[in-house]
Image (cartoon, rainbow, N blue to C red; front, side, top):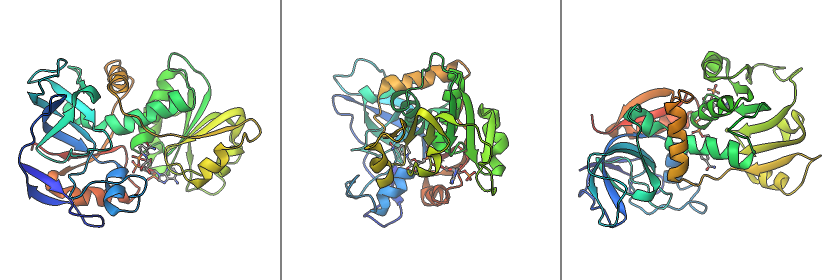
Length: 313
Ligand SMILES: NC(=O)c1ccc[n+]([C@@H]2O[C@H](COP(=O)([O-])OP(=O)(O)OC[C@H]3O[C@@H](n4cnc5c(N)ncnc54)[C@H](OP(=O)(O)O)[C@@H]3O)[C@@H](O)[C@H]2O)c1
């Protein structure tokens, strides 16, 4: 099968020919249609986060995929051949950027009939990070929550899902992005937009109950905009996040977000999609062999929504 593989840390992914994997007893094998890029893909390949997140090399990178089940492990009862599925592959495995991937069945979800395979590939990692950050770390009540929520990086992979999830809960969402993305994030549910490229953009901003930082991990610039009793979370936690997390700063909580992928949360995102409350914004498609170019685009920090890799076409 065709697969993209990087040989060792610091090298770019290149096309290789690999044997089609077998499905282990608890796995399904998926004929991959699409994958999507997440910054962790190229960060791991660079070797710069090897102490925190090591990866076996050579490595077929990629965590998100959608496709069709074409083999089922003997202990799997929940899927049959022909099912359309998607998954965020657990961190220890990766392997999405190939024509076939054997993945743990208990992390996969069947795609709703209404969901296209591109959305299926866009949603898992970024969508679950958005959901878990808002619901589990910041304490947003998905069944109804009218608080003021600030999403920093509102036009990115995680941020654009976070805006929609918070808006669907009833929150008053404000997004931070550059001016070129203002219309996009408004269309996703932001009531207001702060263009961080404009001097004085924070003047007169009403304080927030919850701040979800999808860009960086230093809460310091935002604590002044957080109400007493409010909470700040970052999915890009840094030393500053952990330093602040140890203190209750004027009754303000600071917390890191660390994704725990699971099929139940993927299903919750699928339900939001079916209800018309969540969509994936696609920045650009790349072919499988163009993975290095897709990573370069992601590395630029300017992606709007998700970058998709067309594997089957
Ligand atoms: N902790 C976890 O488990 C976890 C899970 C998922 C992701 N992450 C991490 O979270 C980060 C975000 O991931 P992602 O997939 O959302 O990245 P992404 O899609 O590459 O984010 C790109 C977006 O960031 C925006 N942006 C860049 N600088 C900004 C700034 N100073 N203020 C506001 N917006 C800014 C850009 O908008 P403009 O062009 O308008 O600036 C762009 O739309 C990455 O570092 C990723 O590794 C962590």
